[in-house]
Image (cartoon, rainbow, N blue to C red; front, side, top):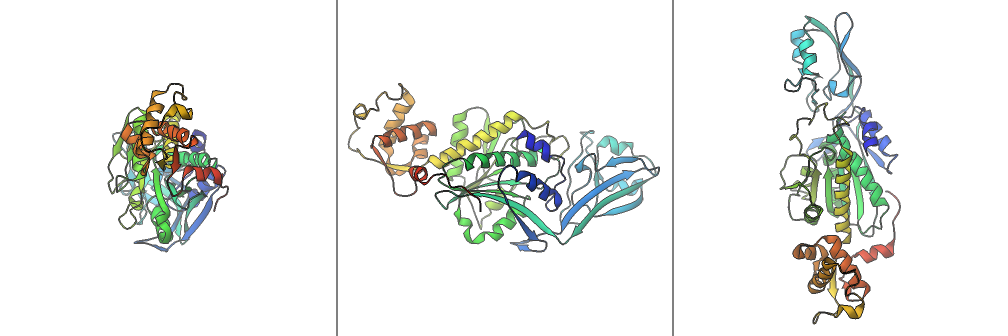
Length: 433
């Protein structure tokens, strides 16, 4: 994951353009992707796909020809979607088109102007203060034209048509945590899921923020109800503790699974209620769709000084945080995959576990022995294993082990509907569509 982040970091991405396509080509080496293009001007819900933006070079020079700001040194030096400009301007004019951070004089800010034509340079405040000459030559070699917006999907079919959605945005230029960490964790999670026997189908979406999620929803409106569970990954590589933002409904299975996993994994973490601002969960959870999609972050957007600045570099992202975020996602998926309802086949009285070779079989594990009793008592076809784990205050993995042992002893039968044993019989469904 860290290697992928470092490879993708220098690319100038935006909501459209060659930077996104180059990013997806490199990502396609990790996982199979179906890349899609939506033409500029396409109506998507209440929005229109914007014109495509590309940039080749940009600079501010002294009249003697010395570059004092150079896009080739850092992609953040140009405000995203800046219209082309070339000419000599006064210092007073230039300063109306400069952004800097006085409180962090060595950092470059990240700025955009997607839907209003403008141009600007983003500079360190030291660069800003050093520009004292009366005139400068400026150039932004960019273009806006009727092209398309690009996004990609990785689809992994499972036993059920019900889907788990994993979404990451691909629209930011050189920002390692807020952009690339989500891409890297999503890609590694897809590789993990591809090797599993899958109860659910999985759809990984890599799209520009806001407009990409809106366009995907517009194109899939007729069957978006297949999405049973979902998670947006954003800012999952910084050193802060994990934060999970719940779906709009707040009590969906993915919300409960994430809360359960974080509680039993221990360590500092936060669970936030839904709010209609943040990342693309606000599109998936808009009231007309109201999907069960939460957002996994570490430090929430805007809550750390490096956010949307050049300080959000690959060095800001830690290996330990990436691994912890990935392991949290895997643990939540294991809950979703393993959660099922059962029916006790000996419901009158407590079965004599020793008769079935279960008493003490687990090496004296009190948790598993207690979990067997809870599973037997609550397996009435109405309670799932997650219900039981929460009520018993045991980890889901412990309850799952107990259920497996009881099922092997014919003390449990699966309740009607798709179950984990169906998945095992079905096998690993290869392929992407």
